[in-house]
Image (cartoon, rainbow, N blue to C red; front, side):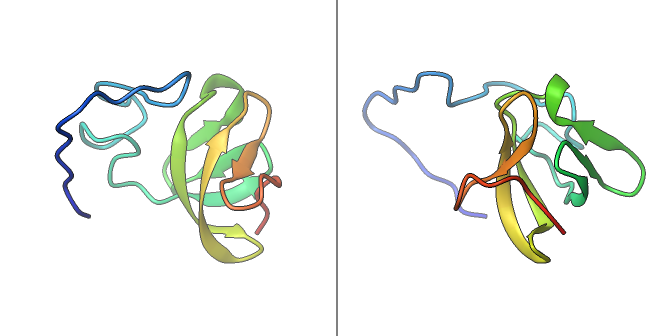
Length: 91
């Protein structure tokens, strides 16, 4: 993963989460966990799960969320949405 340095202001409205992610294995957003689809509103890493309802605006990497292919997804508060099409994730 690359590191980026910004020299100007970065502005976002409901787009960035600062600080440690309580769902992560480290202090980076999303951590080192990869997630797999349980259903449109739940993902699992084999030892735990994330519900979309309690993780609104969280961005994750889902290794099978695009009909079996890897994709980034975010929670809209109800379902995990594919970042590329905005459709619900599916295995």
